[in-house]
Amino acid sequence: MNTKQGILLVGIGLLTVCAFTDIAAAKTWYVDDDGRPGIDFTSIQDAINNASVGDTILVYNGTYYENINLKDGVKVQGEGADVTIIDGGGTDGVWASGVGPSTILDGFTITNCGVGVSIEGGTGPRISRNTFTGNGLPHAGAIWVGWSSPVITDNIITGNVFGAPITLDHADSTTIIHNVIVNNDAMGSAGGGIAIYRSSSVNVLANLIEDNPTFLGGGIFVSDASATIANNVIASNSASERGGAMAVYDGATITLLDNTIVNNTAPVGGGIYCDDSSSTSIVNNIIWGNGDDLYNCAATYSDIKDGDPGESNICADPMFLNPANGDYHLQAGSPCIDAGNNTEAPSTDFDENPRPIDGDDDGIAIVDMGAFEYTPRAVVAVPVLTPLGLVALIGLLSLLTVSRIKRRGHS
Image (cartoon, rainbow, N blue to C red):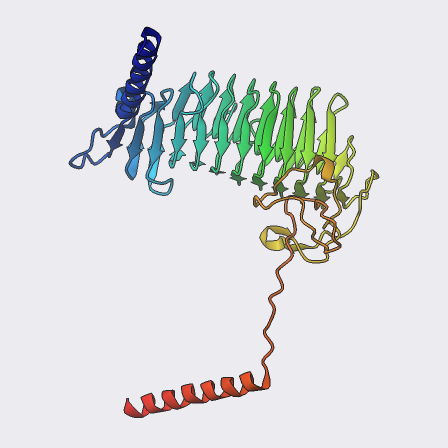
């Protein structure tokens, strides 16, 4: 073996040792407020302080009266949002400063906080599968993000007050996906469900935003920002001034694709309100029953109750499955099936079903309007019995009947 080969082998060996050392260093810490035997800590923050990059903190059920600061690269995992509670005592509950995407907060109810989670700097953590309720300050309700790009997913956000439940400010490339944002009261600020300020390339995808009141933008408020808003259900929100479903201001640029926007209310622009400086692309949406569905903006390939003109727009009952109970899937025969534009459509729908599907069975798959892609039910073939098979079936049924009679006689 020559000198170069020896150096290479030594180098590979050192890399292997380092890799296994890193894996071995990752540790799971256990937290229980009751201090059961074998538990490492009774405080979440004590566990975070002792954790290192790659570690996981498992928090058992209970109510933790504390305010915590997340650490970069550490996962904090609750036993489940229904049983694991962080009570902030009226001040901010969770801070995440300068952390990245391997920092995770998952499986908690976060309540009684000024703001539930505040995120500032860094590329941003993942905030997932939490319940936010009973929080709120004028600048934000459940989650505030500044100068960061987190992923906010699969959370339930309800019963928060004053500020928008989710507020983004200088939060480029943030993703808000698969959240339920319902029954909040954001009358202290714009944005009944989500407020986006001074941010670019924000993605708001497949969220339910419903029954949220405010004064501007009952569902979503966008100001001096750019965002793609797709596959959302935005329903029954209200604004006391403008934009029952959405208000777009101050040079904002938004793309709305395949949303279902229904039954929102406001004195001006019950559906989507846009000021003169904003720019919008509104394609493949159902915008129905909002009073003035579109104010100072236009749509294409959309079903609009107002009958607003635009390329391939329609004005026809979308035939929702059960709108009285909040089910906005399409019935068979809906005019919104295969009526959209494939060019700009997302690849999946609200339920993560693929788009497009050939919903009208004409051999051409075209995307539907609205948040839900209609999926035709499979036709199950019923086997045809031959005369001999029919005789055999009758015989089998006769034997079963006799067997039941005998069992009753013995009982």
